[in-house]
Image: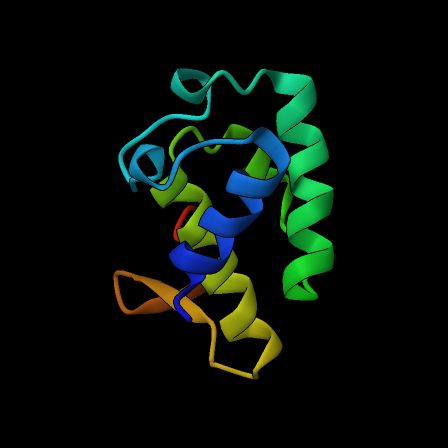
Length: 100
């Protein structure tokens, strides 16, 4: 089961959405999910996937962005190497979620 599928099931159960409403480009707000409900959703994600999402998750707007954050955290948990930003040949600090 893909991360999108598993996250979609969380959305279906918690917010009683139809499967047709779950798409990567949809925003949580367009699904009627307000900021308080989104915060509760973060706890559901943590429990369902066994990860803790970074603070950047609160800024994620679309289903696809949230799925991307989940996938990155799962990769880190599995021991995948972190991406390193290189500037003028000098390695800088690691990027955690694709951002500086």
